[in-house]
Length: 337
Image (cartoon, rainbow, N blue to C red):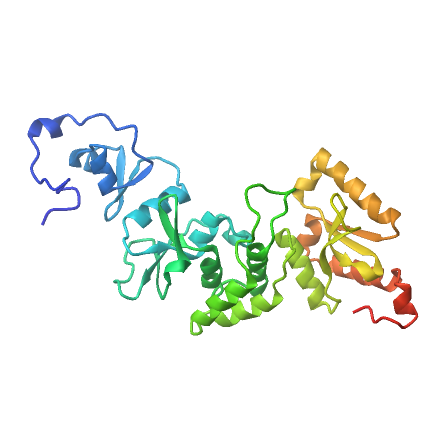
């Protein structure tokens, strides 16, 4: 029986003069490509199976030898070679730019999901899944069929710890801020839509953890560390903070990542990008504005994130004990809740 390169573009016999001196490698071929794409640019069977320029990866898939691995290229070709299937789980999360935990941010695993109506995935080195998926849970981006951000979040619920699942969830429901990004004004998803999706998949492994995560998700976290800080505060029994507090209503008002307005406590998480000189100057003006208004400003950094915000929680507790209290609460006319 002929192998995958013995039948090319529907032809099994080639004139010898075409196989004795292979043509130059076409410039239009990608680093990873399908058999059909090779056919389209005029590559011959001998060019694919002989010499050192190409390597056979899997059925119908080839790569240019000695090329660095590129996840997006590999996912595109795997998607093209697998009709009816879609890229999912960690692979889809990386392609979507979701907030994966550190041990998965550089994962080169290739996850491929198929519906139950198709045979299971049997490609070497590919993590296969057989799932129930709906049409609105799969999308095509740059030629890659993959699970949507929301469905990817749900698929990861089986393996990710609750904290990391909440971080991704907060990313999905976050409302974009004009000063931080362009081209997007709406969140990727809403809590209502995520709840509807969970109802569709009552028996999916991980759905219980996804429900738990949904109850902990909040609109307003601008980064994963901000979510982790909030969860650490809740675990320590602290009152739930408000998110994205502004010093006053209106454009241009200084804002805090989190805090307690009734106690005049502002919490700031300053990540790596805050080391930029211009950003540091903006941060200093922001913090001075809060301090001038009588607020206690607590600033946390990557060291606190690495510590799990353990020391940060102690500082917040101390600040709450010493902080200003609204006179209406002191007089007993308000509860402060």
